[in-house]
Length: 107
Length: 114
Picture 1: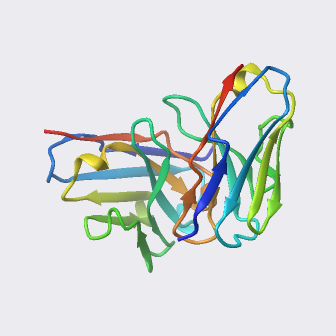
Picture 2: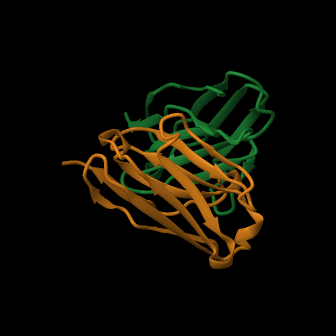
């Protein structure tokens, strides 16, 4: 199975900060990577697909980059509604795997 | 509008069975591979099972292999997950997810407890 290592596990930030979350795959997944935002009691919300494509309706302050094994999610100018947990997800193979999650908290 | 609606969750005793359903609308269901993903309370996301468009291939996580069966009915735009020999560690919200994770249902809670 492809392992996904996401960091950090928790992140404290101020409103307006630039936030970076990274995800590393145990083998190349080309660009078959997605990023999600999840709030308590809700289903994951797709933010980024194919590593860097912004899902329709998602604010442009979210961006994704990377290919192969190293990927990054950046949130420029963090807003109050962005405090949530974020997951990366590889879908190169049928046996999907997810990162452990990054909880973004208010500082 | 693309929609995935899960149903069939509930409380079941250890060793029992449950069948989840997912009703799809707003897209050509038969053109997409489909998946189940679960999330235990307070935990991360875990892939459970996948099925190809014509049910030619099914894939399972090691944790459910031999106990769960994924199936689909393209004529009814529906995806299913038959869960047998349920264990406490199967307690989770189960999500129906379209190929490449481009659409998720709202989830169905399965609680395994005596």
